[in-house]
Structures are given as structure tokens and as C-alpha cells.
Length: 373
Image 1 (tube, rainbow, N blue to C red):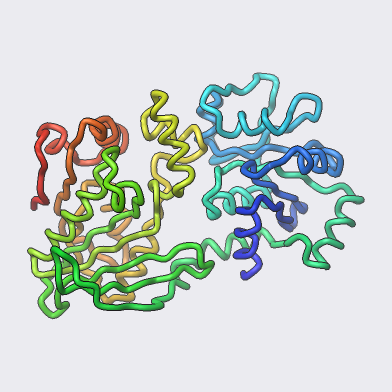
Image 2: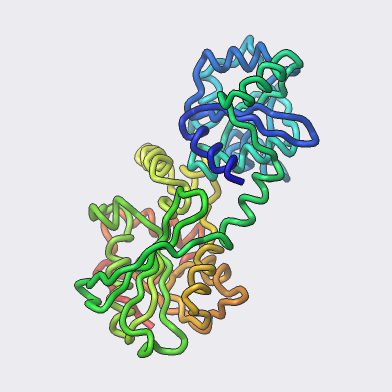
């Protein structure tokens, strides 16, 4: 399992990783960080043509609808360069040539795509089945720790085991302007990439039943810098105020920047939004769905805090469905609004029309709105 965690860091550095499975080994290289020298080695050392693995979201943007969650297309050294591969993986204007056939993914390919997502990279990778000569070289490099090998099975176990291995690592009193009695509890995921914070507002002995709970995904631009492109910062502060006014409760501050795609990809999506795409289409250009967040970790945090009967502060029906699972019981819902601005109106309208968020009240009213029951 520790090898999987190391593999994540190698991929983030642009270093390829060997994935072993019963269906055959795969050398996987992220499109992010792909250089021409490595690409030549993949072409020269593969037993068959290397493949580019892409998600169904990206393939849809390329003009190809598929019934599975991902697929691969064979690469050709005569036509595919580093630049053309990157264009196929994440350029808004790219389209898939009808002559390119799509192939299903093997277990090693699927594991590689999962690692791309877990590494917060663009979910696209070049994979090669090693030739005998390349396999011999890779075996030596693995032996001397020059390259890392992981099994597809370990990658799957790593994903499934993340929430249960969540550790409560530290805590302290942190008085807030709207909630002077607040305690921050830090939880760390086992691979060390993400830390989530539970903010316990007020005295738990005074909490209502059900306990007011807000899930807030981290937003560096909105929460810290006051970006006008979203309503995250005002929504965060409104949530703290609302929970405090109701006698206290819990705010989970989750490390899920950009609806789970990470800060770098969020900035890429912003650039595409500036060129005319909405937030959902921009994410899909990069290969992501309209929301990549997984709230299993939020349920685990509440369970460790012995909070299971909750009133959820949200406008998002997906959060409601995700949280109302054993052992968490969502007994009620409260709306929570931020601030409507000229810059975020389109963003909020997209969330309402394409993701079903309950935002009619704020979109109909240009003034600031507070949290309402």
C-alpha cells in the first residue's frame, strides 16, 4: 500500500510508474509532464502501439460517446507527438479523428487512470505494454529503486481503504469572529496528500438534535482571497454564523478544491471559462465529470466525532444523497447562500441548471442573502 502512495508522488513529478496485473504489465506516464524523450522510449520499447487512456467525459468532448467510464486509443509514432497527445487529452478545440479506434481498458490501465485522479493530475495518461527487452530493463530499474512498481490490486485496495484509514491527528481551540467558541480538529488521509478539518462550533452539550452540519469544499480563491467568480467565501462565513446562531454544530472543511479536481485544474478550467465555456463544460474538457467529490470521508469524519443525526446546510442535492447513508442520518436540510455578483451569476446559474442546485432564491434576488431554514 505504501508503494501506491509513493507512486502518486512520482506521477506528480512526471515520473512513469509500472503497474503489474494478471492481464499484463503497463508502464504508465501522465500526460502532464510528458516529454518527447520519454515518448520516444515508450514508442520504441512497447510490445505494441502505446495507448492514450481518456475518460468518457473527455471522449464526449472529442465527439465520441461511449458506454463505459473510460477507453483508450492507439498512438502512432508517425502522427502523434507530445504536443498532439496533449491536445487530444485536454485542448478545448480538439476532435477525434474517425480513423482512430477505441479500445477497452485493461486492469493496469484502469489503475493508472485512478492514480491520475488521485494525484490531482489531468486524468489522461500514455500507457505501454513493455516488450521483452523493455521488461528486462524495467525489472532492473525496479530492483535498484529507479522506478516504482505497484500492482493494480493494491491501487484498488488503496482507494477502497482511504476513508477507514482516516486519522485524527491534531486539534486546538481557534476562536472565530462569528463563533468565539470553536475547535479545529485535523484529519489526515493515509497517503498524506489531503488534510480535512472539522470545525466544532459551540459546546457539543448544547448542540441541537439533529446537529447542524455544513460540508464546505476548500476554495483558495474564494475563501482566502475573496474571489468574485464564486460565492464560496461568503457562503463559508454565512455557514459559520448560522451554525453559531443555532447553538453550535460542525463545519467540515474538506480538501476538495475545484469540486475535487484540484487547484491547478481549477485554474485551467477558469481559463476556458474566460474563453466562453461554462464551469461544467470546462471541467469535461479536462476529462472530469461535473462533480468529482466523494463524501465518504465526510461521513467518516462525522462518525469519528460521534455525530450521526444531522441537519445538513446545503443547496446541493448530491450532498444530501451522499450523506444520507449509514451510519449518518440526514434528518433535515437548511439552505445556505453566499453573495450574488456580476462575476458569479453565470457560475451559479450553471450549478442550478446543470447540477440541480437549489438556488432559485439567490438567482432571483441580487442582494446579499443570509442562511435560511
